[in-house]
Image (cartoon, rainbow, N blue to C red):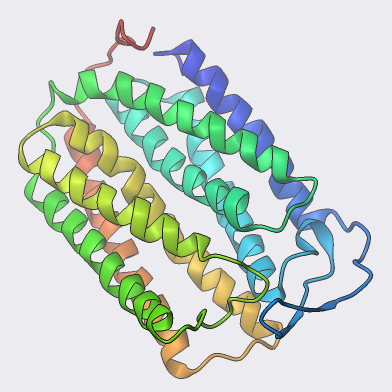
Length: 295
């Protein structure tokens, strides 16, 4: 990024490592594990995917990771475009959108995927993206403070996303725990990493960002943009994962088909509307230099 060369270098490293990880996840065959069916500590028999970089993961999770890889190509392309062709607050806004989904995706792989040779790559992307978020946020905040950005619609969207996440994922988790169950598709996992990311990261950050935006604090927009990018791209990722899983013979009830897709569709389409408000407000924003704190 011409406004911050160091940030540009970090993002290009993320894109290079991410491209390698996606190529490996989608094309690398690898050796098939000696046993495709394993028995968990709970006495359940689980079918492993058995092929490629995600061969040691249960079939349900491996197909979700493959769907995420396809959507990750869009996020990496957005990040690359913001670095190569964009400047000023609008460029930082697009970069923050992309980094939000990249961070969420590779934190999921780092915490939830079975240990394999790609784990160090996922961990490196996770770390680099975290630093890029901090650096881009520091640069963007100075410019956002001089621009009138949308407030009411952003606050409403963030509250809906935060409270909706809590309502969608919290009660089922508490219900399973109250009766000593692990929930559907728990498979070989020992913890619900996805629930941790949604309930301990996405949900509180949405509420914190809503409060900051309501108080006209530019930091709220710095937090909101990665969340909007993440929630926007989770919609096609969820659709792709469900289609891949159904094609593999994994059975879903009508509620399991419709519920998540409709929920992600509402949040994703509203994210498009809020993003449009941001881009309109940033269209006439002046080009800015990197802040002294980030330099």
